[in-house]
Image (cartoon, rainbow, N blue to C red; front, side, top):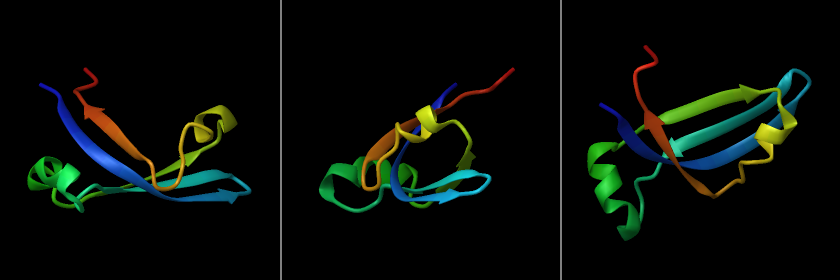
Length: 71
């Protein structure tokens, strides 16, 4: 089974060791009403060292995440 969640990028901080990208669950607004009843809270923080991967994210943009077992 997979689980999908919708997260918004809230910050991008460039550091010496990489770039930290932080996300919070999308809970505000009518367009997120369905998402927020199943994912009412959540946060994700990633330290990314690949510049091409960092370039895929923008502050304020929403992203769908799919969680599925790795094995």
